[in-house]
Image (cartoon, rainbow, N blue to C red):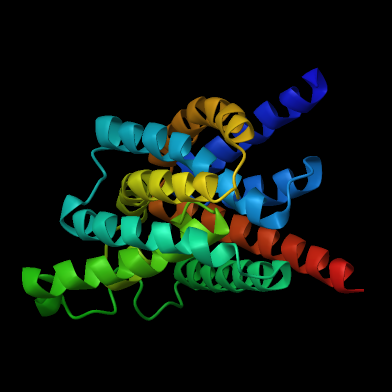
Length: 265
């Protein structure tokens, strides 16, 4: 048991650093690690990861707000509302989803994210430094508020189902749709998914697809890791942070693809 607890604390610390550095997405480490080192069924792995992500979001968002001031409440408020609703229904969806489908969805998002950020860092992204949405529309509250709610709903449902903290979807969405810089996207993403992770995690726990003890053990170690990751992100430039994010997503996509092929062979 001590060795098992130590392993869970290590998973939490490492995932916290990833979450704080990348604005969430810590579940891309927590989910495969819990699947490998615990006997939890796959839906419970995702649910436990969702609940543990609450600690990462709280600690990381506080650091971004306190040290860097990089939180966009104009967009974030609508995403919080949509994310809470999406997180609740996402927890219900995962209980019915197959393990193969969950892995395929994760791989698809990782590949898209890595591609976008790699093009951006190389200077080939046609919307680099801006949003795909016209500036006139982004200046109108009647457009931004509904759009942010819809984005929060979609990302929240996916994050609640996958247990990934939402950063791997929320950060690119904030950059592409709303034109925010990567640091602001990371801080806003963590703030958005604090209530989302709590709602989604509690929904998982109530329906029996989350282990509260494991989630709290991982989360306790993840909180200081998230502080360290957020401070590191704020010390890096936007281009460097984008490269780090893109490389991480690509590595995790390859790893999950290998695991999927092994499971089907």
